[in-house]
Each structure stands twice: as C-alpha cells, then as structure tokens.
Length: 214
Image 1 (cartoon, rainbow, N blue to C red):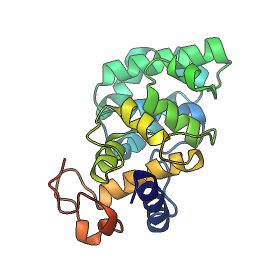
Image 2: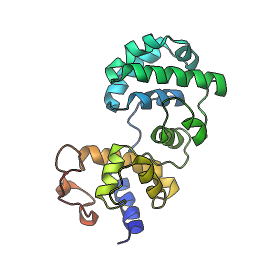
Image 3: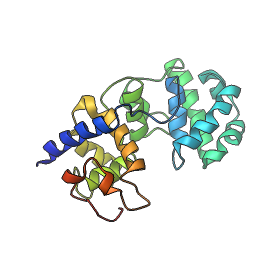
Image 4: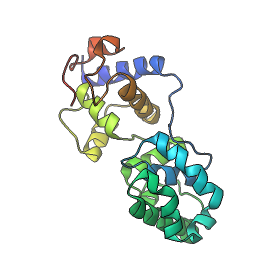
C-alpha cells in the first residue's frame, strides 16, 4: 500500500468512525475562534471553553476587546496559562482587526499570519472552519498520528508535516481529516499511555501497531 493509498483509506475509515467531528473550541464568530485558538496554546480546549464566556461577557465585540486594558484581559484569561503573553497578543490582534480590517477577520492566509499571535496552525484552522477553504491543521495530535500511521517519516516540525500532508490529502478533506485525528488521538491513539491498538479502526493498515507512545 502506497502512502497515497493509505492516506485515502485512513480518511475513509476515520470519516466512518467520527462522522460529526469538528472543532472542539466553542465559537459563534470568527474573531472568537481567533481568541480561543490563541488561548488554547499549552491549554486544553475544554478549559478555554470555560474561560471565554466571561471574557466575551465583559468585552462582547472586537472593538470592545481592542479597547480593553491588557491587564483586564490577562486577569480573565490567566487560568489558561501564559496569561500575560496571551492577553498581549489578543489585544494587539483585535486592535489590528479594527485598524486594518474594519473589525472583520480576513479570509486570506497571509493576512491571518500577519496578525499577532497567529501562526500557521491557527491560520489553517480559521481558513478551514470559518471560511471552508482547504486547510491542514498540524497540532500535536496530527503530528503524532501521521508519524505513527506512516504518512510522514519521522517529521515533527509542524510546517514540514503540513507540507507533506498537502501532497497526500485531498484539499477538500484536509480540515475535517485533522479534526478527526484530534478525536482519534484523544480516544484511541493516545500520547500519555500505550495506544489502544486493539480498538483501532486502522490497526490492520497502521505500521506502528503495538509501538510505544511517541
């Protein structure tokens, strides 16, 4: 089985296993996803989802959050860890949205990358989930799983993994595929224990069955 064939089969099986997989960060507007994805760095999505309602209750718009004192943002978001740097990035990002984009999140990848605190992973998430455009989100689950599954060979750098997957994953499948990898990585192909290979829908085509966690 070639990498291309294995990729398509993995996509097919994960689609059956997790038909409703989607972003696990709660949001109703694009700018709120920008905020949440910054807070999610080194923090669980569940914790972020608990924290942001208080932030949006106090600062309900892009303009309000842009005008908010950084110290007040930090006070609310500090349970997510790295409160000072995250608050600073969120403030600067909202200010740029107001000053350059009339308070709207741009639908251009390079424009997203120009926003404070936004890297390739965040930009891809916005492109895929908000704008429905081709996207590959190389978070820790994605990187761990595609290495275990043999889709990439010992590559751990997010951008290199992303570039390798663009060659294998059909553009229209990328965003949902990465969401399904998150679900599979949390439930079956875990990081902190041995993966539950006996329960895995991919066991017969995965070269790492029974391997120690990476």
